[in-house]
Image 1 (cartoon, rainbow, N blue to C red):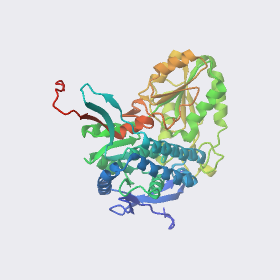
Image 2: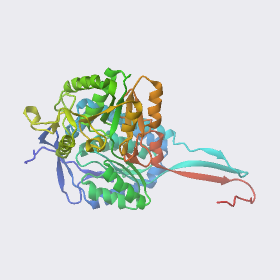
Image 3: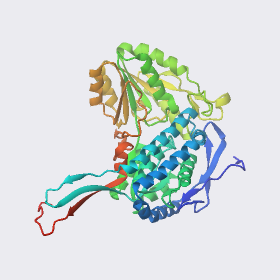
Image 4: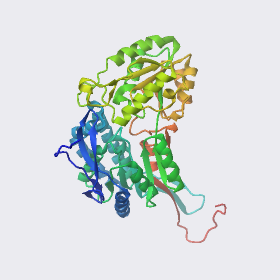
Length: 499
Protein backbone atom coordinates (compact mmCIF):
# COMPACT_ATOMS: atom_id res chain seq x y z
CA UNK A 1 0.00 0.00 0.00
CA UNK A 2 1.30 3.46 -0.85
CA UNK A 3 1.07 5.92 1.99
CA UNK A 4 -0.35 9.38 1.47
CA UNK A 5 2.65 11.77 1.50
CA UNK A 6 0.71 14.05 3.84
CA UNK A 7 0.28 11.30 6.44
CA UNK A 8 1.97 12.48 9.61
CA UNK A 9 4.77 10.64 11.38
CA UNK A 10 4.49 10.82 15.17
CA UNK A 11 7.43 10.52 17.55
CA UNK A 12 8.29 9.19 20.97
CA UNK A 13 8.47 11.66 23.86
CA UNK A 14 11.63 11.16 25.93
CA UNK A 15 13.22 13.65 28.32
CA UNK A 16 10.90 16.41 27.19
CA UNK A 17 11.71 16.03 23.48
CA UNK A 18 9.69 14.50 20.64
CA UNK A 19 12.20 12.15 19.10
CA UNK A 20 12.59 9.36 16.56
CA UNK A 21 13.24 5.83 17.74
CA UNK A 22 16.85 4.67 17.79
CA UNK A 23 16.41 2.84 14.48
CA UNK A 24 14.19 5.44 12.88
CA UNK A 25 11.78 2.70 11.86
CA UNK A 26 8.03 3.38 11.95
CA UNK A 27 4.82 1.44 11.43
CA UNK A 28 1.41 2.51 10.08
CA UNK A 29 -1.89 2.55 11.98
CA UNK A 30 -5.07 2.15 9.92
CA UNK A 31 -8.62 3.40 10.43
CA UNK A 32 -10.73 0.28 11.23
CA UNK A 33 -13.76 1.80 9.49
CA UNK A 34 -11.82 2.50 6.29
CA UNK A 35 -8.75 0.28 6.25
CA UNK A 36 -7.23 2.03 3.24
CA UNK A 37 -6.87 5.19 5.35
CA UNK A 38 -3.66 5.53 7.33
CA UNK A 39 -4.11 7.35 10.63
CA UNK A 40 -0.39 7.98 10.94
CA UNK A 41 3.05 6.45 11.21
CA UNK A 42 4.44 5.77 14.68
CA UNK A 43 7.82 4.87 16.10
CA UNK A 44 8.65 1.16 16.11
CA UNK A 45 10.72 1.32 19.27
CA UNK A 46 13.33 -1.18 20.44
CA UNK A 47 14.69 -1.95 23.93
CA UNK A 48 17.20 0.91 23.70
CA UNK A 49 14.35 3.40 23.34
CA UNK A 50 12.74 1.99 26.48
CA UNK A 51 16.07 2.23 28.32
CA UNK A 52 16.44 5.86 27.23
CA UNK A 53 12.97 6.57 28.61
CA UNK A 54 13.90 4.93 31.92
CA UNK A 55 17.07 7.03 32.06
CA UNK A 56 14.95 10.15 31.66
CA UNK A 57 12.32 9.14 34.23
CA UNK A 58 14.93 8.04 36.76
CA UNK A 59 16.84 11.31 36.42
CA UNK A 60 13.65 13.35 36.95
CA UNK A 61 12.25 11.25 39.79
CA UNK A 62 13.98 12.92 42.76
CA UNK A 63 13.01 16.49 41.90
CA UNK A 64 9.44 15.53 40.98
CA UNK A 65 9.03 13.67 44.28
CA UNK A 66 10.20 16.80 46.14
CA UNK A 67 7.52 18.98 44.56
CA UNK A 68 4.62 19.39 47.02
CA UNK A 69 1.62 17.34 45.98
CA UNK A 70 -0.70 20.39 45.78
CA UNK A 71 1.68 21.88 43.20
CA UNK A 72 1.58 18.64 41.23
CA UNK A 73 -2.20 18.91 41.44
CA UNK A 74 -2.06 22.41 39.94
CA UNK A 75 -0.37 20.97 36.83
CA UNK A 76 -3.16 18.41 36.52
CA UNK A 77 -5.77 21.14 36.79
CA UNK A 78 -4.06 22.92 33.88
CA UNK A 79 -4.10 19.65 31.94
CA UNK A 80 -7.83 19.38 32.64
CA UNK A 81 -8.48 22.78 31.06
CA UNK A 82 -6.40 21.89 28.00
CA UNK A 83 -8.21 18.58 27.62
CA UNK A 84 -11.56 20.34 27.76
CA UNK A 85 -10.44 22.76 25.03
CA UNK A 86 -9.23 19.87 22.86
CA UNK A 87 -12.02 17.45 23.74
CA UNK A 88 -13.50 17.10 20.25
CA UNK A 89 -10.06 16.54 18.74
CA UNK A 90 -9.31 13.86 21.33
CA UNK A 91 -12.63 12.11 20.71
CA UNK A 92 -12.11 12.05 16.96
CA UNK A 93 -8.62 10.61 17.44
CA UNK A 94 -10.11 7.77 19.48
CA UNK A 95 -12.72 6.98 16.83
CA UNK A 96 -10.42 7.05 13.81
CA UNK A 97 -7.82 4.75 15.37
CA UNK A 98 -9.96 2.45 17.58
CA UNK A 99 -13.25 2.59 15.69
CA UNK A 100 -15.81 3.18 18.45
CA UNK A 101 -18.85 5.40 17.89
CA UNK A 102 -18.05 9.08 18.31
CA UNK A 103 -20.61 9.36 21.13
CA UNK A 104 -18.70 6.69 23.05
CA UNK A 105 -15.42 8.46 22.29
CA UNK A 106 -16.83 11.75 23.61
CA UNK A 107 -17.87 9.88 26.75
CA UNK A 108 -14.38 8.45 27.07
CA UNK A 109 -12.83 11.92 26.92
CA UNK A 110 -15.24 13.09 29.59
CA UNK A 111 -14.30 10.14 31.78
CA UNK A 112 -10.61 10.96 31.37
CA UNK A 113 -11.35 14.54 32.41
CA UNK A 114 -13.26 13.32 35.47
CA UNK A 115 -10.29 11.18 36.46
CA UNK A 116 -7.81 14.04 36.11
CA UNK A 117 -10.08 16.39 38.08
CA UNK A 118 -10.46 13.84 40.89
CA UNK A 119 -6.75 13.06 41.01
CA UNK A 120 -5.77 16.73 41.04
CA UNK A 121 -7.90 17.28 44.13
CA UNK A 122 -6.24 14.34 45.85
CA UNK A 123 -3.01 16.35 45.76
CA UNK A 124 -4.31 17.92 48.99
CA UNK A 125 -5.50 14.63 50.48
CA UNK A 126 -2.63 12.14 50.32
CA UNK A 127 -3.37 11.36 53.93
CA UNK A 128 -1.30 9.39 56.37
CA UNK A 129 -2.51 9.05 59.94
CA UNK A 130 -1.32 9.62 63.51
CA UNK A 131 -1.77 7.10 66.28
CA UNK A 132 -0.83 6.94 69.97
CA UNK A 133 2.48 5.21 70.65
CA UNK A 134 2.78 2.63 73.42
CA UNK A 135 5.91 4.49 74.56
CA UNK A 136 5.93 7.82 76.44
CA UNK A 137 7.18 10.96 74.70
CA UNK A 138 6.88 9.31 71.29
CA UNK A 139 4.97 10.48 68.25
CA UNK A 140 3.87 7.83 65.72
CA UNK A 141 2.44 8.52 62.30
CA UNK A 142 2.53 7.45 58.65
CA UNK A 143 3.40 9.29 55.45
CA UNK A 144 3.05 8.48 51.75
CA UNK A 145 6.08 8.33 49.49
CA UNK A 146 6.23 7.68 45.73
CA UNK A 147 7.45 4.40 44.27
CA UNK A 148 9.85 6.25 41.96
CA UNK A 149 9.75 5.18 38.31
CA UNK A 150 6.56 3.46 37.11
CA UNK A 151 5.78 1.77 33.78
CA UNK A 152 2.22 2.12 32.50
CA UNK A 153 1.25 -0.48 29.87
CA UNK A 154 -2.19 0.23 28.47
CA UNK A 155 -4.72 -1.42 26.09
CA UNK A 156 -6.31 -0.35 22.83
CA UNK A 157 -10.00 -0.43 23.74
CA UNK A 158 -9.99 2.72 25.91
CA UNK A 159 -6.88 4.45 24.56
CA UNK A 160 -7.44 7.68 26.51
CA UNK A 161 -9.45 6.91 29.65
CA UNK A 162 -7.44 3.92 30.90
CA UNK A 163 -4.08 5.69 30.49
CA UNK A 164 -5.57 8.72 32.24
CA UNK A 165 -6.80 6.73 35.20
CA UNK A 166 -3.34 5.28 35.65
CA UNK A 167 -1.34 8.40 34.83
CA UNK A 168 -3.18 10.98 36.94
CA UNK A 169 -2.87 9.25 40.35
CA UNK A 170 0.63 8.07 39.45
CA UNK A 171 1.78 11.64 38.89
CA UNK A 172 -0.03 13.05 41.93
CA UNK A 173 1.67 10.44 44.12
CA UNK A 174 5.03 11.81 42.91
CA UNK A 175 6.17 9.15 40.46
CA UNK A 176 7.77 9.58 37.06
CA UNK A 177 6.39 7.57 34.16
CA UNK A 178 7.23 5.52 31.09
CA UNK A 179 3.98 5.18 29.15
CA UNK A 180 3.72 2.28 26.69
CA UNK A 181 0.38 2.39 24.82
CA UNK A 182 -1.10 -0.40 22.73
CA UNK A 183 0.55 -0.59 19.32
CA UNK A 184 -2.76 -0.19 17.49
CA UNK A 185 -3.90 2.99 19.26
CA UNK A 186 -0.88 5.27 19.74
CA UNK A 187 -2.48 8.48 18.42
CA UNK A 188 -4.56 8.98 21.57
CA UNK A 189 -1.39 8.43 23.59
CA UNK A 190 0.50 11.09 21.66
CA UNK A 191 -2.32 13.58 22.21
CA UNK A 192 -2.58 12.77 25.93
CA UNK A 193 1.14 13.44 26.34
CA UNK A 194 0.77 16.68 24.36
CA UNK A 195 -1.84 17.79 26.89
CA UNK A 196 0.51 17.25 29.82
CA UNK A 197 3.43 18.80 27.96
CA UNK A 198 1.36 21.95 27.38
CA UNK A 199 0.29 21.92 31.04
CA UNK A 200 3.94 22.35 32.07
CA UNK A 201 4.89 18.93 33.35
CA UNK A 202 8.65 19.08 34.10
CA UNK A 203 11.14 17.48 31.73
CA UNK A 204 11.51 13.73 32.13
CA UNK A 205 8.46 13.21 34.34
CA UNK A 206 6.38 11.67 31.53
CA UNK A 207 7.93 9.64 28.71
CA UNK A 208 6.13 7.96 25.81
CA UNK A 209 7.46 4.94 23.91
CA UNK A 210 5.37 3.41 21.11
CA UNK A 211 5.83 0.12 19.31
CA UNK A 212 5.77 -3.62 19.99
CA UNK A 213 4.75 -4.72 23.46
CA UNK A 214 7.12 -7.67 23.69
CA UNK A 215 10.55 -6.07 23.49
CA UNK A 216 9.63 -2.67 24.93
CA UNK A 217 7.39 -4.03 27.69
CA UNK A 218 9.88 -6.67 28.73
CA UNK A 219 12.64 -4.08 28.95
CA UNK A 220 10.53 -1.96 31.28
CA UNK A 221 9.69 -4.95 33.46
CA UNK A 222 13.31 -6.10 33.72
CA UNK A 223 14.93 -2.72 34.39
CA UNK A 224 15.79 -2.51 38.12
CA UNK A 225 15.12 1.23 38.17
CA UNK A 226 11.43 0.64 37.40
CA UNK A 227 9.79 0.10 40.77
CA UNK A 228 6.16 -0.40 39.72
CA UNK A 229 4.19 -1.71 36.76
CA UNK A 230 0.52 -1.03 36.06
CA UNK A 231 -0.88 -3.13 33.21
CA UNK A 232 -4.27 -3.50 31.57
CA UNK A 233 -4.77 -6.19 28.95
CA UNK A 234 -5.25 -9.91 28.48
CA UNK A 235 -5.16 -12.39 31.34
CA UNK A 236 -2.39 -14.34 29.59
CA UNK A 237 -0.03 -11.37 29.31
CA UNK A 238 -1.04 -9.99 32.70
CA UNK A 239 -0.24 -13.28 34.38
CA UNK A 240 3.22 -13.32 32.79
CA UNK A 241 3.89 -9.73 33.86
CA UNK A 242 2.64 -10.35 37.40
CA UNK A 243 4.80 -13.46 37.76
CA UNK A 244 7.99 -11.84 36.52
CA UNK A 245 7.49 -8.54 38.32
CA UNK A 246 6.85 -10.38 41.57
CA UNK A 247 10.06 -12.35 41.11
CA UNK A 248 11.86 -9.02 40.78
CA UNK A 249 10.09 -7.69 43.92
CA UNK A 250 8.36 -4.87 42.03
CA UNK A 251 4.91 -3.51 42.80
CA UNK A 252 2.55 -4.81 40.15
CA UNK A 253 -1.07 -4.14 39.29
CA UNK A 254 -2.81 -6.03 36.48
CA UNK A 255 -6.33 -5.47 35.22
CA UNK A 256 -7.23 -8.36 32.93
CA UNK A 257 -10.18 -10.14 31.33
CA UNK A 258 -13.88 -10.43 32.05
CA UNK A 259 -16.86 -12.65 31.29
CA UNK A 260 -19.55 -10.49 32.80
CA UNK A 261 -23.12 -11.65 33.30
CA UNK A 262 -26.44 -9.90 33.77
CA UNK A 263 -29.06 -11.84 35.74
CA UNK A 264 -32.71 -11.16 34.84
CA UNK A 265 -35.20 -12.41 37.44
CA UNK A 266 -38.91 -12.86 36.78
CA UNK A 267 -39.90 -9.73 38.73
CA UNK A 268 -37.51 -7.48 36.78
CA UNK A 269 -38.59 -4.39 34.88
CA UNK A 270 -38.18 -6.05 31.46
CA UNK A 271 -37.87 -2.86 29.42
CA UNK A 272 -35.12 -1.61 31.72
CA UNK A 273 -33.37 -5.00 31.76
CA UNK A 274 -33.38 -5.45 27.99
CA UNK A 275 -32.15 -1.92 27.41
CA UNK A 276 -29.33 -2.48 29.91
CA UNK A 277 -28.31 -5.79 28.34
CA UNK A 278 -28.29 -4.38 24.80
CA UNK A 279 -26.14 -1.42 25.79
CA UNK A 280 -23.90 -3.64 27.90
CA UNK A 281 -23.42 -6.28 25.21
CA UNK A 282 -23.18 -4.20 22.05
CA UNK A 283 -22.11 -0.71 23.10
CA UNK A 284 -18.54 0.05 21.95
CA UNK A 285 -18.98 -3.07 19.76
CA UNK A 286 -18.59 -5.22 22.87
CA UNK A 287 -14.93 -4.21 23.21
CA UNK A 288 -15.02 -3.37 26.91
CA UNK A 289 -13.67 -5.43 29.78
CA UNK A 290 -16.97 -4.72 31.58
CA UNK A 291 -19.16 -5.60 28.58
CA UNK A 292 -22.11 -7.93 29.16
CA UNK A 293 -21.09 -11.16 27.45
CA UNK A 294 -23.58 -13.43 29.26
CA UNK A 295 -27.23 -12.96 30.24
CA UNK A 296 -28.92 -15.36 32.63
CA UNK A 297 -32.72 -15.27 32.45
CA UNK A 298 -35.19 -16.84 34.85
CA UNK A 299 -37.31 -19.43 33.01
CA UNK A 300 -40.68 -17.78 33.70
CA UNK A 301 -39.84 -14.70 31.61
CA UNK A 302 -37.37 -16.21 29.16
CA UNK A 303 -39.54 -16.00 26.02
CA UNK A 304 -40.72 -12.46 26.69
CA UNK A 305 -37.16 -11.35 27.38
CA UNK A 306 -35.80 -12.93 24.20
CA UNK A 307 -38.50 -11.36 22.07
CA UNK A 308 -37.66 -7.87 23.33
CA UNK A 309 -33.91 -8.56 23.14
CA UNK A 310 -34.05 -9.53 19.46
CA UNK A 311 -36.28 -6.56 18.64
CA UNK A 312 -33.95 -4.02 20.26
CA UNK A 313 -30.82 -5.61 18.83
CA UNK A 314 -32.27 -5.59 15.31
CA UNK A 315 -32.95 -1.86 15.64
CA UNK A 316 -29.27 -1.02 16.19
CA UNK A 317 -27.57 0.83 13.34
CA UNK A 318 -24.10 -0.25 12.21
CA UNK A 319 -21.47 1.82 10.44
CA UNK A 320 -18.57 4.24 10.66
CA UNK A 321 -18.19 5.50 14.21
CA UNK A 322 -17.79 9.08 12.99
CA UNK A 323 -21.46 9.02 11.97
CA UNK A 324 -23.30 10.01 15.13
CA UNK A 325 -26.38 8.03 14.06
CA UNK A 326 -24.59 4.68 14.35
CA UNK A 327 -24.86 2.55 17.48
CA UNK A 328 -22.28 -0.08 16.53
CA UNK A 329 -18.97 0.64 14.84
CA UNK A 330 -16.29 -1.66 13.40
CA UNK A 331 -14.10 -3.90 15.47
CA UNK A 332 -10.71 -2.38 16.11
CA UNK A 333 -8.52 -4.56 13.88
CA UNK A 334 -8.22 -7.53 11.56
CA UNK A 335 -7.05 -9.58 14.51
CA UNK A 336 -10.17 -8.69 16.48
CA UNK A 337 -12.61 -9.57 13.74
CA UNK A 338 -10.77 -12.84 13.11
CA UNK A 339 -11.09 -13.70 16.81
CA UNK A 340 -14.79 -12.81 16.98
CA UNK A 341 -15.65 -14.78 13.85
CA UNK A 342 -13.68 -17.74 15.17
CA UNK A 343 -15.70 -17.73 18.40
CA UNK A 344 -18.96 -17.48 16.48
CA UNK A 345 -17.91 -20.61 14.61
CA UNK A 346 -16.92 -22.32 17.84
CA UNK A 347 -20.32 -21.55 19.38
CA UNK A 348 -22.13 -23.13 16.45
CA UNK A 349 -19.87 -26.19 16.55
CA UNK A 350 -20.47 -26.58 20.29
CA UNK A 351 -24.21 -26.82 19.75
CA UNK A 352 -25.35 -23.38 20.86
CA UNK A 353 -28.22 -21.95 18.81
CA UNK A 354 -27.37 -18.88 16.76
CA UNK A 355 -30.44 -16.76 17.46
CA UNK A 356 -29.40 -13.51 15.78
CA UNK A 357 -26.56 -12.13 13.64
CA UNK A 358 -23.28 -13.98 13.40
CA UNK A 359 -22.11 -12.64 10.04
CA UNK A 360 -19.31 -10.42 8.87
CA UNK A 361 -20.62 -7.43 6.90
CA UNK A 362 -18.71 -6.97 3.64
CA UNK A 363 -20.93 -5.15 1.14
CA UNK A 364 -21.33 -1.47 0.31
CA UNK A 365 -20.27 0.86 3.11
CA UNK A 366 -19.00 -2.13 5.10
CA UNK A 367 -16.51 -3.30 2.47
CA UNK A 368 -13.64 -1.19 3.82
CA UNK A 369 -13.94 -1.99 7.52
CA UNK A 370 -13.97 -4.69 10.21
CA UNK A 371 -17.72 -5.03 10.65
CA UNK A 372 -19.64 -7.91 12.19
CA UNK A 373 -23.31 -8.14 13.16
CA UNK A 374 -24.28 -8.11 16.83
CA UNK A 375 -24.64 -11.79 17.66
CA UNK A 376 -26.84 -13.68 20.12
CA UNK A 377 -26.52 -17.35 21.07
CA UNK A 378 -29.07 -19.26 23.16
CA UNK A 379 -29.19 -22.82 24.51
CA UNK A 380 -25.72 -22.16 25.88
CA UNK A 381 -24.18 -24.49 28.45
CA UNK A 382 -21.69 -23.37 31.06
CA UNK A 383 -18.96 -25.72 29.84
CA UNK A 384 -18.95 -24.30 26.30
CA UNK A 385 -15.96 -22.19 25.30
CA UNK A 386 -18.22 -19.30 24.31
CA UNK A 387 -19.54 -19.37 27.88
CA UNK A 388 -16.09 -19.43 29.50
CA UNK A 389 -13.64 -17.48 27.34
CA UNK A 390 -13.47 -13.74 26.77
CA UNK A 391 -14.51 -12.92 23.18
CA UNK A 392 -14.20 -9.11 23.36
CA UNK A 393 -16.73 -8.42 20.66
CA UNK A 394 -20.48 -8.02 20.11
CA UNK A 395 -21.35 -11.61 21.05
CA UNK A 396 -23.95 -12.35 23.76
CA UNK A 397 -24.62 -15.80 25.21
CA UNK A 398 -28.01 -16.49 26.82
CA UNK A 399 -28.67 -18.98 29.65
CA UNK A 400 -31.85 -20.20 31.30
CA UNK A 401 -32.07 -20.32 35.10
CA UNK A 402 -34.66 -22.03 37.26
CA UNK A 403 -34.46 -19.46 40.06
CA UNK A 404 -32.23 -16.78 41.60
CA UNK A 405 -29.84 -19.25 43.26
CA UNK A 406 -29.39 -21.13 40.01
CA UNK A 407 -28.71 -17.85 38.21
CA UNK A 408 -26.04 -16.83 40.72
CA UNK A 409 -24.46 -20.28 40.39
CA UNK A 410 -24.21 -19.84 36.61
CA UNK A 411 -22.86 -16.31 37.11
CA UNK A 412 -20.05 -17.62 39.32
CA UNK A 413 -19.13 -20.56 37.11
CA UNK A 414 -16.28 -18.83 35.23
CA UNK A 415 -12.64 -18.07 36.01
CA UNK A 416 -13.21 -14.33 35.63
CA UNK A 417 -14.73 -12.07 38.26
CA UNK A 418 -14.77 -8.48 37.05
CA UNK A 419 -18.37 -7.22 36.94
CA UNK A 420 -21.95 -8.53 37.04
CA UNK A 421 -25.47 -7.25 37.46
CA UNK A 422 -28.94 -8.32 38.51
CA UNK A 423 -32.35 -6.98 37.54
CA UNK A 424 -34.96 -7.52 40.23
CA UNK A 425 -37.38 -5.61 42.42
CA UNK A 426 -36.87 -8.00 45.32
CA UNK A 427 -34.45 -6.56 47.89
CA UNK A 428 -33.88 -9.92 49.54
CA UNK A 429 -32.75 -11.49 46.27
CA UNK A 430 -30.74 -8.41 45.36
CA UNK A 431 -28.77 -8.61 48.61
CA UNK A 432 -28.32 -12.35 48.26
CA UNK A 433 -26.73 -11.64 44.90
CA UNK A 434 -24.57 -8.80 46.29
CA UNK A 435 -23.25 -11.06 49.04
CA UNK A 436 -22.55 -14.12 46.87
CA UNK A 437 -21.65 -12.90 43.36
CA UNK A 438 -17.96 -13.59 42.80
CA UNK A 439 -17.16 -10.35 41.04
CA UNK A 440 -15.28 -7.26 42.15
CA UNK A 441 -18.09 -4.96 41.03
CA UNK A 442 -21.81 -5.65 41.31
CA UNK A 443 -24.75 -3.67 39.90
CA UNK A 444 -28.43 -3.83 40.76
CA UNK A 445 -30.91 -2.82 38.05
CA UNK A 446 -28.06 -1.41 35.96
CA UNK A 447 -25.71 -2.72 33.24
CA UNK A 448 -22.40 -4.40 33.99
CA UNK A 449 -20.56 -1.44 32.51
CA UNK A 450 -17.95 0.88 33.91
CA UNK A 451 -17.73 2.65 37.22
CA UNK A 452 -17.18 6.04 38.81
CA UNK A 453 -13.74 7.58 39.23
CA UNK A 454 -13.91 7.94 43.02
CA UNK A 455 -14.71 4.25 43.54
CA UNK A 456 -12.34 1.29 43.10
CA UNK A 457 -12.35 -0.55 39.79
CA UNK A 458 -11.22 -4.15 39.47
CA UNK A 459 -12.06 -7.81 39.69
CA UNK A 460 -11.44 -11.16 41.28
CA UNK A 461 -9.84 -14.36 39.99
CA UNK A 462 -8.48 -14.15 36.45
CA UNK A 463 -9.79 -10.58 36.12
CA UNK A 464 -7.07 -8.93 38.11
CA UNK A 465 -4.26 -8.98 40.61
CA UNK A 466 -2.75 -6.32 42.85
CA UNK A 467 -4.43 -3.25 44.29
CA UNK A 468 -7.50 -1.80 42.57
CA UNK A 469 -7.48 1.12 40.21
CA UNK A 470 -9.32 4.41 40.73
CA UNK A 471 -10.70 5.73 43.98
CA UNK A 472 -8.48 5.91 47.05
CA UNK A 473 -7.15 2.43 46.28
CA UNK A 474 -5.65 3.77 43.05
CA UNK A 475 -3.40 6.12 45.01
CA UNK A 476 -2.45 3.33 47.40
CA UNK A 477 -0.86 1.36 44.57
CA UNK A 478 1.23 4.31 43.38
CA UNK A 479 2.49 5.10 46.90
CA UNK A 480 4.58 3.47 49.58
CA UNK A 481 3.57 3.83 53.23
CA UNK A 482 6.34 4.86 55.62
CA UNK A 483 5.81 4.57 59.37
CA UNK A 484 7.52 7.26 61.46
CA UNK A 485 8.48 7.12 65.17
CA UNK A 486 9.85 10.26 66.86
CA UNK A 487 11.21 9.98 70.40
CA UNK A 488 11.20 13.47 71.90
CA UNK A 489 12.15 12.48 75.46
CA UNK A 490 15.29 13.84 77.14
CA UNK A 491 16.78 10.52 78.30
CA UNK A 492 17.10 6.82 77.50
CA UNK A 493 14.03 4.62 77.76
CA UNK A 494 13.33 0.90 77.56
CA UNK A 495 11.79 -0.18 74.29
CA UNK A 496 9.79 -3.19 73.23
CA UNK A 497 11.87 -6.34 72.79
CA UNK A 498 9.42 -8.15 70.60
CA UNK A 499 10.49 -6.78 67.23
